[in-house]
Image (cartoon, rainbow over all chains, first blue to last red):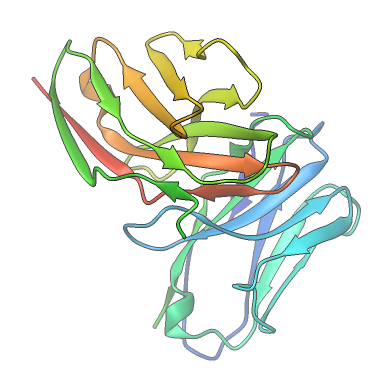
Length: 112
Length: 113
């Protein structure tokens, strides 16, 4: 399978715990994006990388969120001290510059 | 102001008929791209069609076509010959310059047999 993959697909955690999600983009894509989608809404941009450089971060990305793409390949998104409002689907996408973004299946986070 | 507006929260269409899903956008950029994605109940976002701001022809991909009216800032998706498998959420999105996508709130399409 050469599409975007995300792991885990589902995560249930207790409020206050830390969680980390992983995204593996399509191998030849140098751009990687993270979005968050809450129920009934469209995805909202969180951050994106070109190779290993994090080029833009949304105001939605509070200090509790951090994202890395250490070698310009896979990326991780960490949420520290989770809150119930963090419950959402976290989507990863990758693209070549100025081309369409291909999305992974998402990680559904539930904070109890 | 909303960057992408989808005014139809839900739409019904009979199988084999055509349906138009509305999308209007707001940007001051000259160079931008417009996208439509489909999201079935499984949750994955599936790319359908792309229209560049400088493209003079309306984009088409199989049963999907994009009715691009630049002066009106609209980019409606037309699905011809609807199939039961077309039932899903549909999102319009815009990319301004090299930035990430901005999505609308989506339209839920239900195809009835």
